Length: 238
Image (cartoon, rainbow, N blue to C red; front, side, top):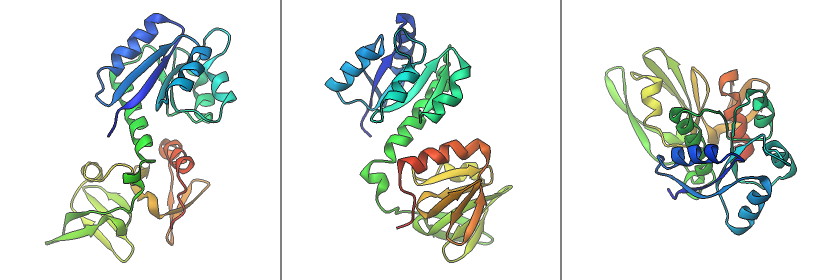
């Protein structure tokens, strides 16, 4: 994929330096500029389209949250702050993630991978019809599963139950092993036990996802990610 172009916005030079050093360790990030306030950020955005902003919250004159509340057309945003009490409001303003200072590299990496996946959901290659297949071991045979026919995967201990449009198959593999084989952007985890095909989701109602003639529970852990996917794309089945 192309690099995600980034802006770092923080009134503290040391904080900008730390985030730049973290970003420089990630091959798919390209830091285009650093801004000390929101005014400078707005100038930079007019000069150069940007994919992702690392945005501090508490800054002189205008805070990061004030900026988010004042604009509807913005790049992806990862908030960076020393204050955990802003987390809820930040997520309500549709940020990708919320990083608490001092920022560990492992946590930074998790956040930027979320941004990368979110970005790729809008690319033509991801929105195209899902193709491809898996071979899975089921009972005493190996079966070919077309990914476009999969409704969802259900974890059953050391097995996974694969629900397709026409049948189900119990395969000898773990959910973790399965996830590593699936194309990014086409499936989303909604519960520790359920991984669903985004293209087959018809609706989210309360804490239940509806797809085909099924209803599956959405746990609190995964609900936010699901809501972000719904906001990014129309998930109604074509």
